[in-house]
Image (cartoon, rainbow, N blue to C red; front, top):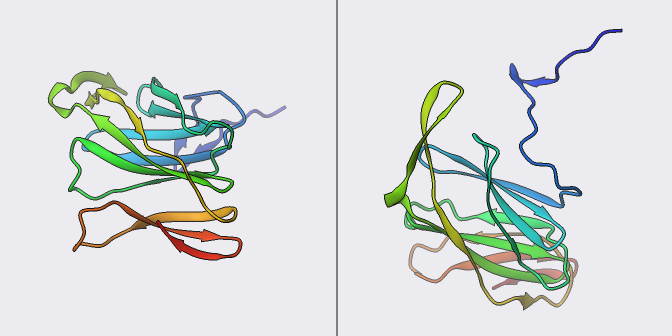
Length: 160
């Protein structure tokens, strides 16, 4: 019998989190860290990929399952990153608050790295779309300071 270690681009798989079923995944690269947003039902976990540590876990929706997570990658938000969370016909804006003044040193795979301090997830009000949301993304508008999103629903497009 032959047992092989599965790899992607010569990097072995490793278990960093095991709460199933996972209903949505998204990553966010910070300066020295990679964060994984993992949704299980109506809960969203923030996981430090390097250490596998769960930094935060909060309920987003009262009853809807999270089907998608989008991150705003704009450098205009250095200490709080907007997230867009949707499931069924529910959508909400979430802010991931970081304390980048208090980065902690850590060691990972024998190279130095920085560990972010997650101050929390600020979950906004849930908005109900007229139909199921199939996909969503942030609307980039340099002329506006508002956080806006575009949605694709089963009956058409929407702008929130």
